[in-house]
Length: 142
Image 1 (cartoon, helix red, strand yellow):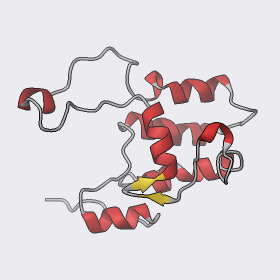
Image 2: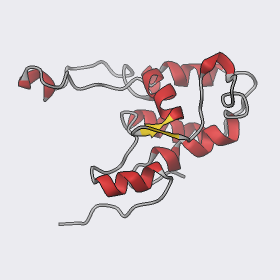
Image 3: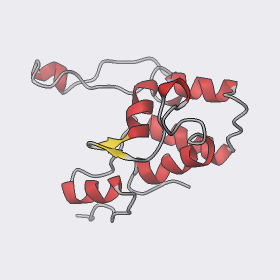
Image 4: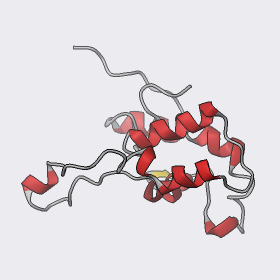
């Protein structure tokens, strides 16, 4: 399971489509959280809803002190990624009788442990392809 290179639409969205969108979509989504794969700007509606609930690191503030922007503070184990995520804690505790398979949990944990990235590329054309749910080639070996 998974995607290579990383692709939120291929790795995470299928889990959401299978278990979450029946309640978290439409004109009145539960708790106002929309988990569809509908593109919205640079990402998808589900990504905008879930990324803040994943424990990722923001790497400083753009335009700020170079030392702060390009460095990461030390963190204790379990603080970032799936182990530090309120989203994973909620899923493991149980959420409205949603039963995720071990493979589905692994997909979500992989995404969180990869710093909750959306794209697996910096190339704008490849990003557009990934946003539409398409696959891209991995990076060339040098």
